[in-house]
Amino acid sequence: MGLGLRHLQDKLDKWGIEYFRAEELCRFPRWGEVSAPPIKLQRNIRPTVEFADELRRQFGAAIRCINGYRNYLYNREVGGAPQSEHLSFRAMDIQPLEYTQPAMERLRALAVELAEECEGDVRILQYDKFIHVDFGAADWKTRDPEKLDNRTRR
Image 1: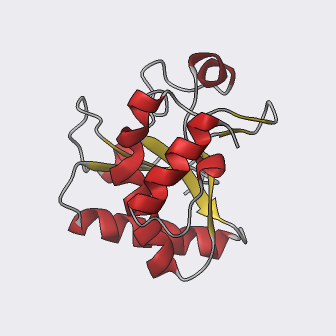
Image 2 (image 1 turned 60 degrees about the horizontal axis):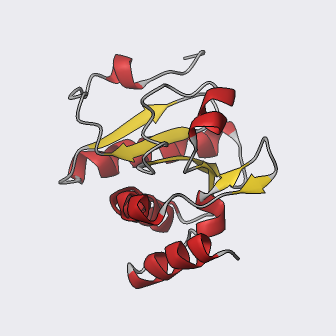
């Protein structure tokens, strides 16, 4: 584990994160690489990973982070928004480890319920195969389900 990943894992441990590891939050699946964000960005993930950790606890089954930190090149390759919260390490895309449509729907419902109880500005975007969670997006202030649901089939 490189220095940046060790630094991030130390932070996750300090914050009491039980279910997510640094390598998972920094994986670039299409490239088969792991790349830690700059140390100055690492604290940005705290509210998001704490939310995801609590979501995992309440879900009662394993959840995986399929996308966390992205650098600009990787973000462009995967079709991410130019101002994606992944670039500043404020976002996670998550799904049940044992993926089924009923499990995904249960995770979605639980995430929305938990977001409603949350004090911070959490955004839950729903896609066909995952949920995007982020804190800190200052340019959006909607709870409109139509704008937050990006699934192709409903």
